[in-house]
Image (cartoon, rainbow, N blue to C red; front, top):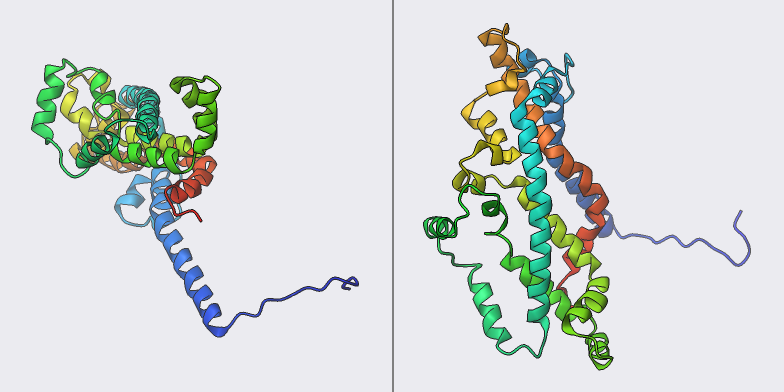
Length: 304
């Protein structure tokens, strides 16, 4: 029973609006299924019987559930070493990226910086033209960073794209009146950045952390070029060896009695198990940081 003075108002949609809604939801569901199917298949194959994987009987749900592949993965010293290195590169690299990108973006956002237009142009120029792989390798070698952890951290310390995005945020989203008031009160540039700008820039910093962290976690090409010591390899390099070079190494879990046919079958499940183990940390973090992507999309939009 509807109370007096209150009526429910139903919005009547036109036929065109209904058709548009049906098409939109249908496409969204199809897109979700297309994105979710590979993830579900990899997870199902990692816990399924390898013989069923080879025969193509695994379509969506797992069959012949077993965890032998995961046992082999976590017994592998290479995977554990790669995991440790990947975590170090991701956290240390992201910390360096955020500090340098924030400092550079704040400087470029200041209207009193002489020549900031020319500096911004030079930074933008690097987004379209680069020195190439060989000159970059020679530079890294001359700096003495070959086969060191710094080769994974310093060459990509600042992304030109992320720097410009953060600069635009500081320029258009941080009230200049607050910054001017801080200067009037005697606050220095560093104090203004730490006490005024950063507290109101949580969304852009979170977006930059996500971008940089995922980039470091998935990085493997730099390790292949600059690293020679296997002890410095990140997880993605070991994953590449398993997927492309078909090198099991100690991934067989130390089972000396396993014949070649069984090792070949085990390899099929190992591929999916390693992919799952390498992807799981990022998949667990994304749901908690998803709301920052919405803010990240709105960064730089027209405000009226």
